[in-house]
Image 1 (tube, rainbow, N blue to C red):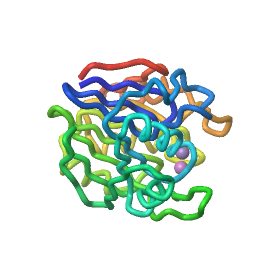
Image 2 (cartoon, rainbow, N blue to C red):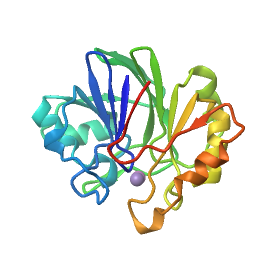
Image 3 (cartoon, helix red, strand yellow):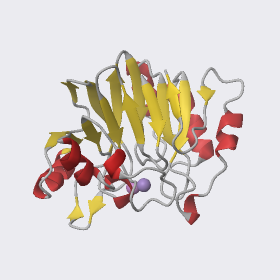
Image 4 (cartoon, helix red, strand yellow):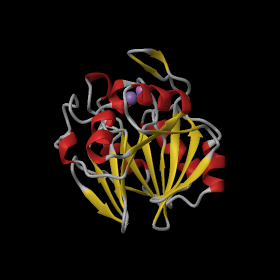
Amino acid sequence: MKITYHSHSCFQLEGNNHSLIIDPFLTDNPLSKITPAEIKVDAILVTHGHFDHVGDAVEISRRNKATIIAPFELANYFQDKGAESHPMHIGGAYAFPFGRVKLTIAHHGSTTESGAVGNPCGFVVTIDGKTIYHAGDTGLFMDMKLIGELNAIDVALLPIGDNFTMGISDALKAVEFLNPKMAIPMHYNTFDVIMQDPAHFVEGLQGSPTKGVVLEVGESLEL
Ligand code: NI
Ligand code: MN
């Protein structure tokens, strides 16, 4: 399984036969090095309605004939835009051809230009036997302990930008709760108010059983 960071909260997961992208904010993203036209995927996962997560989901869906997987109200919004979507909701899991997706809580908002679109979420995705937790935009919450207890997480993707989400110290506490093999920071340095040095996150994990890894924009990791 290959995981590629496209900056902000956007990651691409590629298994043996399938691939997917999470929160594909590319076109209006000052850090992204790739355009939606270059993305080849079978599915698109979107955590919530904010522009920096919805991003190019509709265009990527159309070009690839790929389903957008999102919380129910947001999935309806995508259907109204003419995209094919698969609605889910928090606590629910579904076995897709590419792997299993389960929605987790996230403490945040979820709006589009059309208004509120239900609750935000995080995703636990299992592809080719590897389990990835993408927290979405969220503050720290105690139930991360439960997510860690219920899932043997290989990689946790955690926001560290502060202001809109957890900052570094809360993200380090999240790692303690989740107990993943590896933690990768996200949602930082895209905008002025979320500037962070991700090296501080990695330093904070020294001596912990979890390995902290910073991915450069466009960088991939083989699991
Ligand atoms: Ni947001
Ligand atoms: Mn965001």
